[in-house]
Length: 208
Image (cartoon, rainbow, N blue to C red; front, side, top):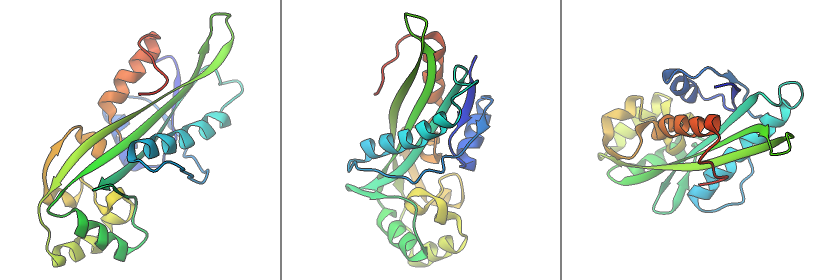
């Protein structure tokens, strides 16, 4: 791609996924406080991803403004209409895992891409594209002792829904409907296709 790609996230999982598919990028986490007025999971992750991508894009306006593309992403877990973000403490992690074990829940990742390109008059304009991927995850039952032992590893504390599918929680994953990488934190297959559309400047819509 002829643009410098900026990942507006400090997530090691998103960094690993982008590296896995051979994309070269720089990391510039968004330091702006997350604010979301939406209530539905799909709209929440879309708004939060935009809230990460645009502030970082603004930081790079200047000499590089015609050459960069910023990726913002946000992931959350939802179960029966209840949105589960990152647990604030071990007690909340216990409540989340108790809800999810033995049931099927949904994982949503919103992705926003922001870049600049020429309009018909040759002027540089800012463009963006946001989309949402959803996956369903079925979990085996977990005993109270298993939940306590898992929380004690510390793995749940920085993850939406209090679990990491790519970590020790894999022992309780019964099945997935949708993109596995979406559950990890970034649907890189869909992302790559969207980047190709931007490169070719065709088939683009502002939102999905």
